[in-house]
Length: 187
Image (cartoon, rainbow, N blue to C red; front, side, top):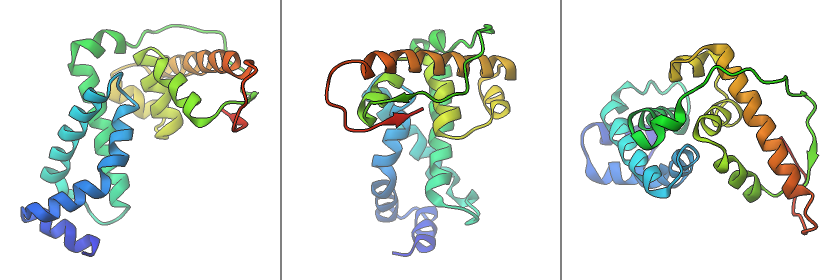
């Protein structure tokens, strides 16, 4: 089924079309949701909430961009909402106005594979993990993130710098191990 027709059928409440749309995007979007949580169960909850929003707002999709990108934005926003509403994350998501020494903008060469990088990002405290993902992975600006998280722009910059510094330190520890590495990665 063509994408426009699939969207139209979903808007009309066709369960088969909704299932097809869900199946087409669910795996990738679960990965997006998981990037912001500390458990797969929470990511699955976010995915379900996100798809409810997708199906209720699908009539707002303007066909001016990629449907997957539109769905991804909903999943990211749903993830942030989930983090701010659930006590488990709410305490950890508190964005502190801290000042850190500026991080060098030089990108160190580190030898880690993608799986190791993802694991290290997931080990960051929730606030740093969230800000890092929003900046480095999703491409949001510091201004946009400050609005999303109800924080000051400079605070978001500090959180991102601190997250980056923690990642570099953790990746150096991994990179220095005498294990065989698959990739030469740079952050």
